[in-house]
Length: 72
Image (tube, rainbow, N blue to C red; front, side, top):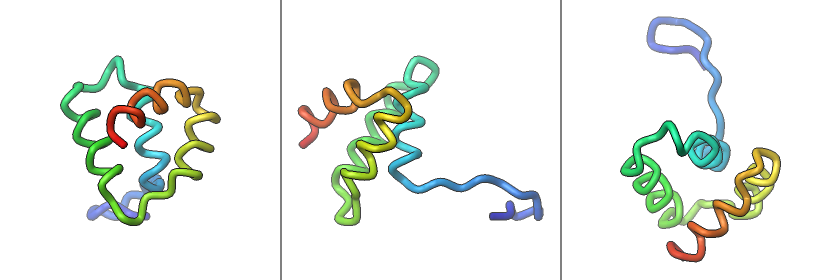
């Protein structure tokens, strides 16, 4: 995808974005993490299978499961 200025930028799906936020949670504001997770889990188009695949690849699956237990 291109930015408004025409520069190429990488765009990922929402599941990858959630896992990226979790992987960088020590450098991310807790409010951003909380809002992102709550927003994702309330969506009707969420794909939990894809989310768990990304979580395993990025080694945040245990952390994600902890959040899922609270939010689901």
